[in-house]
Image (cartoon, rainbow, N blue to C red; front, top):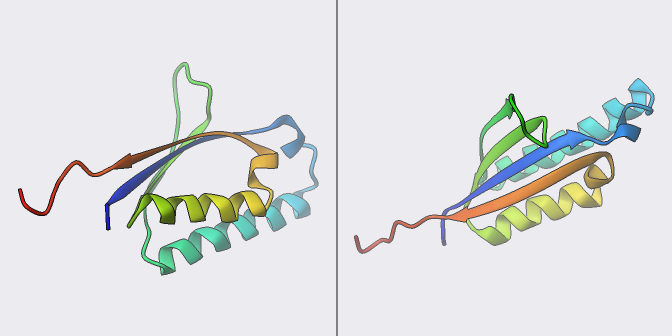
Length: 102
């Protein structure tokens, strides 16, 4: 297994704001359930931060996964729940440079 960091930048798309509060809450709950499932499967959320300054995104979310495949699975489940339809995003994956042998 390779330790993997997933860096997820996001900002709401304009049509997110046109959803009624109940619809926003429903979508948010579904995405939080996916995050909870990933955590239960061994992923570690490292934090969610508001981005300040000149940047294309509003928020950055950091996670540690056991592998790039686990990070991809997390993202695939978010997109299947329409996350990418309501949030613009950029994802980066970093793999550990450390080795077991030193």
